[in-house]
Length: 95
Image 1 (cartoon, one colour):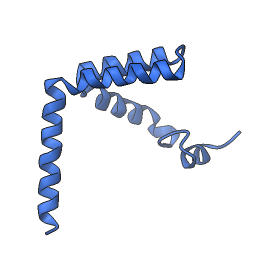
Image 2: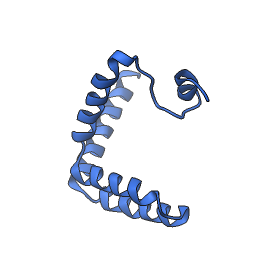
Image 3: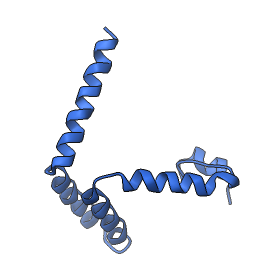
C-alpha cells in the first residue's frame, strides 16, 4: 500500500487533490475532455476499452491506425497550425 503523494511521485496518478476539491477537479477535467474533437474522444475511449482485452502488439497497431485517422482530420490540422504559430511567436520573443 502507498499513499496518494507516493502514487503521484511514481507516476501512478497524475495529480492529487484535497478531498474537498475532488468533485470540482473532476468536473474541470470532464470539461477539458469534452472540449476536445469528438473523433479523438471516441477513438481514445475505444482504445481504452479494447486495450483491456487485446494483446499489446495488436493494441499498438490499433492505436497507430487511430492516430493516422486523427492526423487526417481538419481539427488536427488546425490545432497543429495554431501550435506552430504559438511556437513561432515564443521563439521570436527569445531572440
